Image (cartoon, rainbow, N blue to C red):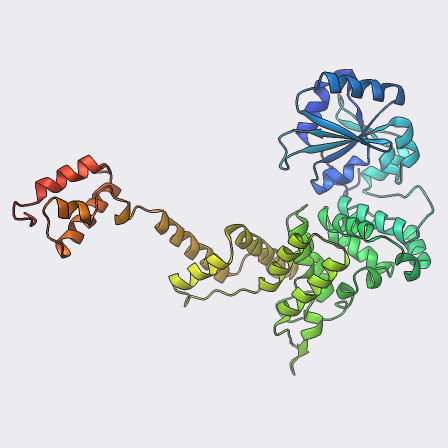
Length: 440
């Protein structure tokens, strides 16, 4: 087995569901590997044509555990399953064996998974491609659509594409032919590029084949533009390595990481010492992000989220931030967005090639926010089951002594000495109040 090969595991919940079906279980195909590698809740499976319809009718009448529903699209059946995966549903894409054989694009697609042995089976050459982490196209077609699909699959799997295929893709690429590709198709390919094991592999293939300058020219413009002493890589490599470092299968964060420094190309200024500066690059990066996401037809809500992350990824915290300033920041940035900003900052650091931990200032901000949240969660005087109006009704005169008594009650409740209930606190207050309404 090649040292480069990192086994791709099928989700345990899916294997358990298939095993429970016994001999009637469909066979997972090698095309599932790219979904497993990306952590996507999707798998492809097959049954012989004479069994497929019969099996689906049986499951419709007598659903196995976890079955939700099924729907047909052409020759493919989509089955929704509840397998307790991170996503709500797991999608099993079911084909006839005969149709699936004709649609195989790559050698590993012809593999089938043996549930009992827990191994992939197939021809020796196809298994060799799997073990060598090699994606071998079965067709000579290397036009823009086929090349983008192959490069996207290679990024999802972190598999190598043959050099001769890449060379054919480079020679055959024609921008005028690429412009005929639908926006929906291009959107899907960009999502595949960024969602898998190693997006940087895909973007490097796009660069090698000269497709990148057409597909994402904003990213291509960063090639060869060095940064400063805080970065080992130029803007292009930093961007794709930051994308690698963002959480897998989180398209929003992966795209934010890919786009966060695109504005450095426009704002780059080199000083006498050769050090580059990029004043307000995050503002320009956000504009690039907006244009790219519109060009690829992304959902406006997701696009706004990505643009916000890119625009705010350079947020700074200093020891001079007061509690009030931190509270203003957390009102503007919700907890889930703040978590994404921190993940983006961490991916940015890892993509620098020099630093891998969060900056000290960001760690201090997290601690500051956590302290304020703990304090806000703690019991306060207003949470006591007795208040100043109660004490006045009991004969206590308004004044500082009232605050002293309530503060004492609060402390004793926090320490567990007193129960925070009205009867208990009123009884203690009555004992402490003199007939004239003063503390004893």
